[in-house]
Image (cartoon, rainbow, N blue to C red; front, side, top):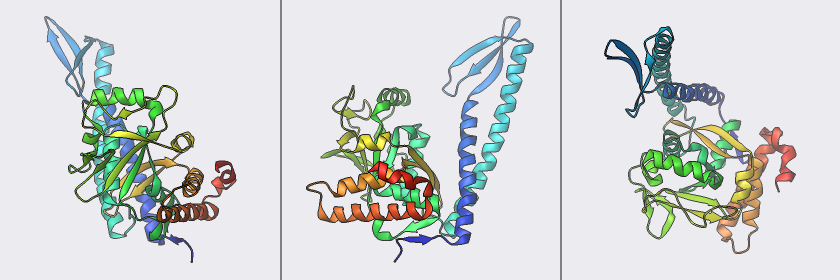
Length: 320
């Protein structure tokens, strides 16, 4: 029996259409963010000055009215109107695609996973994390238009690998946000709380867990790392093999929830996933039940590489 099930043709077509709209929506959001705030004229004495106001309310004078500042003002207004119109149109289109995704059963990623990935992106944190573990399989199957057997996917926790190589920029971003990492997760589900006896884990009222891990401390890495200045925030726990995952090329793919909502999942290329799973399965003291699942996941992803991802076949031996 094959570990893979091909999507129906109408599901594949719908996924392609939905992916296109969703990626354009992300670009539209980025364009709209570039023209956040406003620009207006302020009269002081007998002179008009062009004022740029940021989304946070900070104001800066761009100089007195002239042909140059008038052109700056007009271009800004035009860009803002165009960005706003495009964002509104794509938002409506994305909502339509979500409904079609759900109706055609295009997605099967747990809704909380997609909500969490989108919450990280909304907070500007997506480039600091990589989805690893079982949920990475959703990215691989989505890229190939297939579905893995259910036994390979069942899990109640999402593993996020924090890129501690970017810890300084991450810490600066968290200070600018004036928030905590658990606060960002609570945008996905307000019931997320840090587990008192496992500070690397957030758990919601449904029992779904988000674990934050990091590479073993090296170079200037702090031995312990809390995700923000908030004393009640999550701590990233060190794990073996994380350095190998961080060093691997990234694999990014749009994934679809059972609800039809979409998100971009960043993970490692599939050959690295296979190598890591085989390494974990061979580790002394690994729980036998988990070892069986590790081996199964390595097998199904390796099978997918052979049948649907020939671009990675020559990398399989190098990744081991």
